[in-house]
Length: 249
Image 1: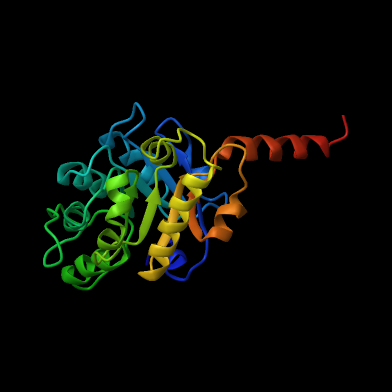
Image 2: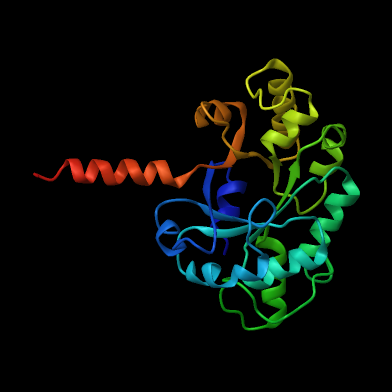
Protein backbone atom coordinates (compact mmCIF):
# COMPACT_ATOMS: atom_id res chain seq x y z
CA UNK A 1 0.00 0.00 0.00
CA UNK A 2 2.83 2.41 0.90
CA UNK A 3 5.94 1.76 -1.18
CA UNK A 4 8.18 3.92 1.00
CA UNK A 5 7.23 1.81 4.04
CA UNK A 6 8.12 -1.36 2.13
CA UNK A 7 11.47 0.13 1.12
CA UNK A 8 12.28 0.98 4.73
CA UNK A 9 11.19 -2.35 6.23
CA UNK A 10 13.04 -4.33 3.56
CA UNK A 11 16.33 -2.68 4.50
CA UNK A 12 16.80 -0.91 1.18
CA UNK A 13 17.97 2.69 1.00
CA UNK A 14 15.15 5.22 0.69
CA UNK A 15 16.24 8.37 -1.13
CA UNK A 16 14.11 11.48 -1.20
CA UNK A 17 14.33 15.16 -1.92
CA UNK A 18 12.69 18.29 -0.57
CA UNK A 19 10.15 20.47 -2.34
CA UNK A 20 7.54 23.12 -1.68
CA UNK A 21 4.24 24.35 -3.12
CA UNK A 22 6.20 26.50 -5.58
CA UNK A 23 7.62 23.43 -7.34
CA UNK A 24 5.91 21.20 -9.93
CA UNK A 25 6.24 18.09 -7.81
CA UNK A 26 4.47 15.91 -10.38
CA UNK A 27 7.78 15.82 -12.29
CA UNK A 28 9.95 15.18 -9.23
CA UNK A 29 7.59 12.48 -7.97
CA UNK A 30 8.22 10.39 -11.09
CA UNK A 31 11.95 11.13 -11.36
CA UNK A 32 13.01 8.10 -9.29
CA UNK A 33 12.91 9.42 -5.71
CA UNK A 34 11.27 7.26 -3.07
CA UNK A 35 9.74 10.23 -1.30
CA UNK A 36 9.24 13.97 -1.57
CA UNK A 37 9.64 15.78 1.74
CA UNK A 38 7.64 18.94 2.41
CA UNK A 39 9.14 20.95 5.26
CA UNK A 40 6.97 23.25 7.37
CA UNK A 41 9.51 23.80 10.15
CA UNK A 42 12.28 25.76 8.41
CA UNK A 43 10.37 27.08 5.41
CA UNK A 44 7.88 29.87 4.64
CA UNK A 45 5.17 27.33 3.82
CA UNK A 46 2.33 26.26 6.06
CA UNK A 47 0.81 22.81 6.21
CA UNK A 48 -2.53 23.84 4.72
CA UNK A 49 -0.71 25.01 1.58
CA UNK A 50 0.44 21.45 0.91
CA UNK A 51 -2.82 19.88 -0.24
CA UNK A 52 -2.41 20.86 -3.94
CA UNK A 53 1.18 19.59 -4.38
CA UNK A 54 0.42 16.42 -2.42
CA UNK A 55 -2.63 15.79 -4.61
CA UNK A 56 -0.43 16.31 -7.69
CA UNK A 57 1.60 13.29 -6.57
CA UNK A 58 -1.30 10.82 -6.78
CA UNK A 59 -0.31 7.79 -8.82
CA UNK A 60 3.36 8.75 -8.80
CA UNK A 61 6.28 6.66 -7.54
CA UNK A 62 7.36 8.94 -4.69
CA UNK A 63 5.44 9.18 -1.43
CA UNK A 64 4.61 12.57 0.12
CA UNK A 65 6.16 13.06 3.57
CA UNK A 66 5.72 16.14 5.74
CA UNK A 67 7.94 17.54 8.46
CA UNK A 68 5.71 19.37 10.90
CA UNK A 69 7.03 22.38 12.78
CA UNK A 70 6.46 20.78 16.18
CA UNK A 71 5.27 17.54 17.71
CA UNK A 72 1.69 18.74 18.05
CA UNK A 73 -1.46 16.76 17.30
CA UNK A 74 -3.11 19.54 15.30
CA UNK A 75 -0.12 19.98 12.98
CA UNK A 76 0.18 16.24 12.45
CA UNK A 77 -3.55 16.04 11.72
CA UNK A 78 -3.35 18.87 9.17
CA UNK A 79 -0.46 17.12 7.37
CA UNK A 80 -2.22 13.77 7.28
CA UNK A 81 -5.47 15.33 6.10
CA UNK A 82 -3.50 16.91 3.23
CA UNK A 83 -2.53 13.38 2.17
CA UNK A 84 0.90 12.77 3.72
CA UNK A 85 1.95 9.12 3.82
CA UNK A 86 4.63 9.82 6.38
CA UNK A 87 5.21 12.28 9.23
CA UNK A 88 8.51 13.67 10.48
CA UNK A 89 8.50 15.52 13.81
CA UNK A 90 11.47 17.51 15.14
CA UNK A 91 13.10 17.43 18.56
CA UNK A 92 11.75 14.12 19.88
CA UNK A 93 13.71 13.70 23.09
CA UNK A 94 11.88 11.13 25.22
CA UNK A 95 9.81 7.98 24.96
CA UNK A 96 6.74 9.93 26.06
CA UNK A 97 7.21 12.41 23.21
CA UNK A 98 7.63 9.57 20.70
CA UNK A 99 4.50 7.87 22.03
CA UNK A 100 2.54 11.11 21.72
CA UNK A 101 3.71 11.47 18.13
CA UNK A 102 2.61 7.94 17.25
CA UNK A 103 -0.79 8.43 18.89
CA UNK A 104 -1.35 11.61 16.89
CA UNK A 105 -0.55 9.73 13.67
CA UNK A 106 -2.81 6.74 14.24
CA UNK A 107 -6.53 6.21 14.38
CA UNK A 108 -8.31 4.53 17.31
CA UNK A 109 -7.59 2.06 18.87
CA UNK A 110 -3.85 2.61 18.29
CA UNK A 111 -4.04 6.38 18.52
CA UNK A 112 -6.23 9.43 18.80
CA UNK A 113 -6.06 10.94 15.30
CA UNK A 114 -9.30 12.71 14.49
CA UNK A 115 -11.19 11.27 11.53
CA UNK A 116 -12.05 13.50 8.55
CA UNK A 117 -12.94 10.82 6.02
CA UNK A 118 -10.58 9.02 3.67
CA UNK A 119 -7.47 11.17 3.27
CA UNK A 120 -4.49 10.31 1.14
CA UNK A 121 -3.74 7.65 -1.43
CA UNK A 122 -4.30 4.37 0.39
CA UNK A 123 -6.44 2.35 -2.04
CA UNK A 124 -10.07 1.21 -2.07
CA UNK A 125 -11.63 -0.65 0.84
CA UNK A 126 -14.93 -2.53 1.26
CA UNK A 127 -15.16 -1.46 4.89
CA UNK A 128 -14.14 1.82 6.51
CA UNK A 129 -12.38 -0.05 9.31
CA UNK A 130 -10.09 -1.57 6.66
CA UNK A 131 -9.02 1.94 5.62
CA UNK A 132 -8.32 2.92 9.25
CA UNK A 133 -6.31 -0.23 9.90
CA UNK A 134 -4.32 0.19 6.69
CA UNK A 135 -3.30 3.74 7.56
CA UNK A 136 -2.35 2.65 11.07
CA UNK A 137 -0.14 -0.08 9.64
CA UNK A 138 1.34 1.63 6.58
CA UNK A 139 1.97 5.22 7.68
CA UNK A 140 5.67 6.07 8.08
CA UNK A 141 6.45 7.69 11.44
CA UNK A 142 9.81 9.41 11.82
CA UNK A 143 10.98 11.12 15.03
CA UNK A 144 14.02 13.37 14.70
CA UNK A 145 17.05 12.85 16.93
CA UNK A 146 18.71 16.22 17.47
CA UNK A 147 19.78 16.61 21.09
CA UNK A 148 21.90 15.10 23.85
CA UNK A 149 18.71 14.21 25.67
CA UNK A 150 17.51 12.22 22.66
CA UNK A 151 20.84 10.38 22.52
CA UNK A 152 20.43 9.44 26.17
CA UNK A 153 16.93 8.12 25.44
CA UNK A 154 17.62 6.37 22.13
CA UNK A 155 16.59 2.89 23.23
CA UNK A 156 13.39 4.18 24.76
CA UNK A 157 12.47 6.15 21.63
CA UNK A 158 13.40 3.37 19.20
CA UNK A 159 11.33 0.80 21.10
CA UNK A 160 8.05 2.72 20.73
CA UNK A 161 5.71 0.66 18.53
CA UNK A 162 5.05 2.49 15.29
CA UNK A 163 8.38 4.28 14.99
CA UNK A 164 9.98 3.47 11.61
CA UNK A 165 13.09 5.66 11.41
CA UNK A 166 15.44 7.46 13.79
CA UNK A 167 16.18 10.56 11.74
CA UNK A 168 19.15 12.76 12.58
CA UNK A 169 18.86 16.50 12.30
CA UNK A 170 22.51 16.91 11.25
CA UNK A 171 23.15 20.56 12.11
CA UNK A 172 21.16 20.69 15.36
CA UNK A 173 22.82 17.52 16.62
CA UNK A 174 26.28 18.89 15.84
CA UNK A 175 25.51 22.07 17.77
CA UNK A 176 24.25 20.06 20.75
CA UNK A 177 27.47 18.06 20.72
CA UNK A 178 29.57 21.26 20.77
CA UNK A 179 31.00 20.54 17.31
CA UNK A 180 28.91 22.94 15.17
CA UNK A 181 28.73 21.68 11.56
CA UNK A 182 31.88 19.58 12.05
CA UNK A 183 30.27 16.49 10.62
CA UNK A 184 33.48 14.52 10.10
CA UNK A 185 34.88 14.81 13.63
CA UNK A 186 35.11 11.81 15.94
CA UNK A 187 32.58 13.16 18.43
CA UNK A 188 29.93 13.49 15.77
CA UNK A 189 30.74 10.19 14.10
CA UNK A 190 30.51 8.33 17.41
CA UNK A 191 27.02 9.73 17.89
CA UNK A 192 26.06 8.55 14.41
CA UNK A 193 27.37 5.08 15.15
CA UNK A 194 25.31 4.94 18.33
CA UNK A 195 22.16 5.95 16.50
CA UNK A 196 22.72 3.46 13.66
CA UNK A 197 23.42 0.63 16.13
CA UNK A 198 20.33 1.44 18.19
CA UNK A 199 18.10 1.52 15.11
CA UNK A 200 19.48 -1.84 13.93
CA UNK A 201 18.96 -3.31 17.39
CA UNK A 202 15.28 -2.43 17.29
CA UNK A 203 14.73 -3.43 13.67
CA UNK A 204 14.07 0.07 12.36
CA UNK A 205 15.97 2.38 10.01
CA UNK A 206 18.47 5.14 10.73
CA UNK A 207 18.40 8.26 8.60
CA UNK A 208 19.92 11.65 7.93
CA UNK A 209 17.68 14.60 7.10
CA UNK A 210 20.34 15.63 4.59
CA UNK A 211 23.82 14.49 3.59
CA UNK A 212 26.31 17.09 4.88
CA UNK A 213 28.02 19.17 2.18
CA UNK A 214 31.17 17.61 0.80
CA UNK A 215 30.37 14.14 2.15
CA UNK A 216 29.39 11.11 0.09
CA UNK A 217 25.98 9.46 0.53
CA UNK A 218 27.52 5.99 0.41
CA UNK A 219 29.69 6.83 3.41
CA UNK A 220 26.48 7.09 5.44
CA UNK A 221 24.85 4.09 3.77
CA UNK A 222 27.88 2.00 4.77
CA UNK A 223 27.45 3.23 8.36
CA UNK A 224 23.86 1.99 8.34
CA UNK A 225 21.89 5.09 7.33
CA UNK A 226 19.24 4.07 4.80
CA UNK A 227 16.97 7.12 4.69
CA UNK A 228 17.97 10.62 3.57
CA UNK A 229 17.28 13.46 1.17
CA UNK A 230 19.42 14.71 -1.67
CA UNK A 231 19.08 18.10 -3.41
CA UNK A 232 17.41 17.62 -6.79
CA UNK A 233 18.66 20.86 -8.37
CA UNK A 234 22.28 19.83 -9.12
CA UNK A 235 21.15 16.47 -10.51
CA UNK A 236 18.57 18.16 -12.73
CA UNK A 237 21.14 20.67 -13.96
CA UNK A 238 23.61 17.88 -14.78
CA UNK A 239 20.97 15.95 -16.68
CA UNK A 240 19.97 18.99 -18.71
CA UNK A 241 23.58 19.83 -19.46
CA UNK A 242 24.31 16.27 -20.57
CA UNK A 243 21.24 16.21 -22.79
CA UNK A 244 22.12 19.51 -24.43
CA UNK A 245 25.73 18.40 -24.88
CA UNK A 246 24.50 15.47 -26.97
CA UNK A 247 22.81 17.73 -29.52
CA UNK A 248 24.69 19.10 -32.49
CA UNK A 249 24.78 22.88 -32.23
